[in-house]
Amino acid sequence: MADLGRFNKPNRPYIERPLIFRQPAVNENPERVVIQCTRGSFTGFGALPRSPNIPPITEAQAEALDALHFLAEKHHIALDLQKGDIQYIHDYSIFHARKAFIDDTEHQ
Image 1 (cartoon, helix red, strand yellow):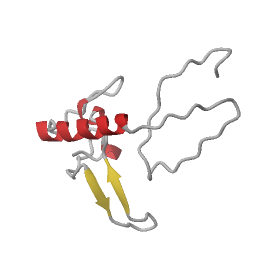
Image 2: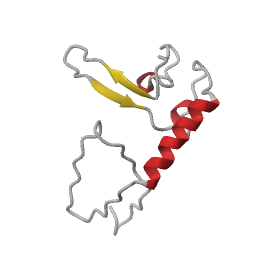
Image 3: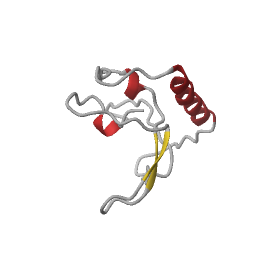
């Protein structure tokens, strides 16, 4: 799997690693578990085309990413935030997503 920090940067090499990866502590950065949970980074999406410098994902990798995606969809919790609400979540500790929203004079 490609290192997303290097995604779509043609002069940098990709790094192969598992879908779930234990990243050891380096300098001031603590040890952590890194989980790649979307295939868009490997296939391209929207205004970010797929980098030609990384090999295509395998069918097994695509199935693993899909399984993770569908499990997350099945067990998600949606928050109905209202004006003045604050949401504070450490994004290294959970999967998180954002849905589309309407930004108009009533909803900003």
